[in-house]
Image (tube, helix red, strand yellow):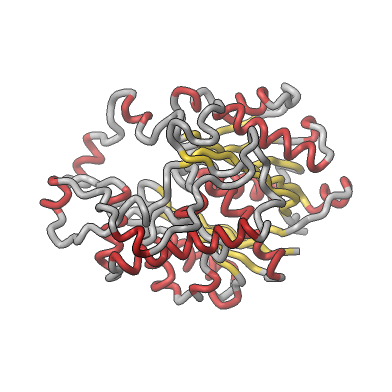
Length: 390
């Protein structure tokens, strides 16, 4: 008999601007995560000793986010010292992978109750801090396989825009729509059930309701360099800060358990994990992984794209969900219906469970049954998850 892994609760902080002066920049990332963990217990009447494991994503595991930040956050939250924790790095999909591991552990019978989530303080541990410590992840063998070298994600986003024929106006229009949808959802109180106010901040700081195509049109390309322009002369350089996700601070967590545990504790299962997939893809284009990940999970689930009621495809850059939609034939109205990371932020280690919470809340509000979540990841990978609302 298969054990269902169910979602009982999702909690997240608001998104803070990931730079000095941002709403969450004064909070140590360990304490930011600890507040979310404490909230999960309090909202569900649990004792920490009932938690079998805490699995958290974090990308820049250096400085304030080093030393297995999951364990530090568990201790900072006041959990019993018997509760273990592990930190996971699958780049932008780190907390989605944490949720996969947690749910798969429940299905396998290794766990009864798990918290999965993630944290990233990009104001306090800036993107690229790990590389600044010294050394390079590009080894002699890796360099021999890719002698021309790989590129940063911004250049990969440009390559995708070029390959799929996405104009600057199309990218900017998508970004403006992301802000409009997120602003409308926030104004309607649609995020309220999952938001944990932090030091008086109760709304996502990164949403800009006044964003328009015209206001975005004046922004300069963000990733053009002389070296990249020489290597890729065909690129028109359309990716800007406005049609990319902003640097963000945030933390999130999802409470996952067996259906039997939920029944025993009198807790309501809100959804079950239906299917999982993870793939590797071209590390030069890097961000196209959600396309094969979606094909794989649809094959495994027996569902078609039209059977799904909503899709959360992480908006690392506008070209990513647009290329995904073009390749999958997905309905644009179902794609990030409450806005995506361009508006709601992309706190790297936290984004996976942030998207999961948004997807679940949307299914509940709309009466939908199935939802897909997928994220591009550094190095050319992607996770995909299908949940079924209960």
